[in-house]
Length: 382
Ligand SMILES: Cc1ncc(COP(=O)(O)O)c(C=O)c1O
Image 1 (tube, rainbow, N blue to C red):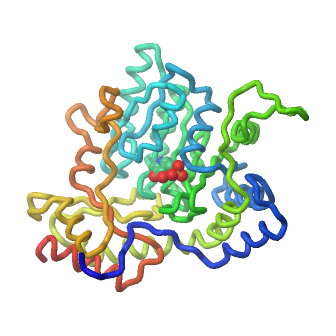
Image 2: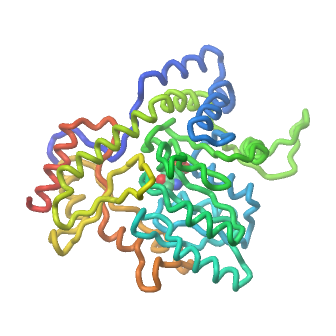
Image 3: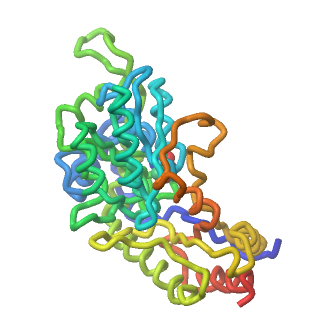
C-alpha cells in the first residue's frame, strides 16, 4: 500500500454551521430524542422537498419500517421491492414477517422496471394476493420512472413507498424525488449527500399518518399520565443534537448536489469517450443529485473486470465499489420470487456484473479526482 491519503467513496462533508445548532441544543439542555431542532428540521425538510409533513427518525431503515407499519403490512403479506438496492430497502419487510418479491431494473434509470412490475402485479392479482406496498428505490440519486410506476400501482390500487435514501435533492419532472408515493423516505447516514451521522426522515402528505409514525417511533405510548401501551412501537426518533446537524446540512444541500454533479461531469470528460465505458444515464426530465458516479464497463472490449479496476484503486488507497448486488442474488433471500425486466433479460444482474461506483464526495478536490482518473486509466491500460 502506497502512503497516499485515502480517498473515500462518499465521506461526510460538514458546512461549519452544524456546531451552532449543536451548541444551541447544549445551551438549552435539549439533549433528547425530541426538541426544537427536531421540529425545525422536520419543517425545513418538508418545505424543501414540497411534502406536507415529515417525521425525523433514527435511520432511513426505520423510516421504511414505519411506512410499512402505517400501511398495515403484517405477517404473511406481500411487499414488492426493487432488487438492485442496499438490503436496508427490504429488511423492514422481513421485520414485519411479510414476504418480499423482487422486481428487476430497466436500463434507462437502472431502477424498477415498469414491465417487470406489471407482470408481477398481474400474476399476484391472479393468485389473489396483491402486495400491500411497492418499495421503489431511486438508485445513486436517479429517480425511477415514477409516472409509469405510479400508473401501474394505481391501476392495482397498491400504495408506493419511495426509497429516496440516495436521491435527496434530485428531481423528477420538476418535483423533488421522494414525494411521489404515499410515503417517501430519506437517509442521513454518514455516506449520504447530507448527513446527521445517522438518521432518516419519513415524508408524506398524510399528516395524520405522520402523527401515527411519531407515536409508533416513541414506543407507542398512549396518552395517559402512567405508561400505557396498547400497541407495540419502537424507539426510532431522531435526537435533537443530530437534528441540529441536519438543519445545517440542509442549508447546503443544493451546493452539495452541484458539487456531486460537477464531479460526475469531470469523470465523464476524462473517461466518457472511451469505447467500452458507459456512465449511468440520467432520464430526460429528471435531475439526479449524482450521489455516486457509477459506470459500467464492457469487459471484453477493455479486457478487465470491475474488480481489477477496484483493486487497482485500492492499491492506491482509493475506495471504489461494485454496484449493489441485487437482493434476489443474496444468500439470505434464496428462493424468493423475482421478476426480471424481460423473461430472458435480467438488467440488475448485468449492472452488478459490470458496474463500478467511483469516489464522489462533495469535498473531493480536483487533484484527488485526477488521482482516481489516473489510476483508472492505468488499470484499463490507457
Ligand atoms: C437505497 C437505500 N435504502 C435505505 C438505506 C437505509 O438508510 P439508513 O442507513 O439510514 O438506515 C440506504 C442507505 O443506507 C440506502 O442506500
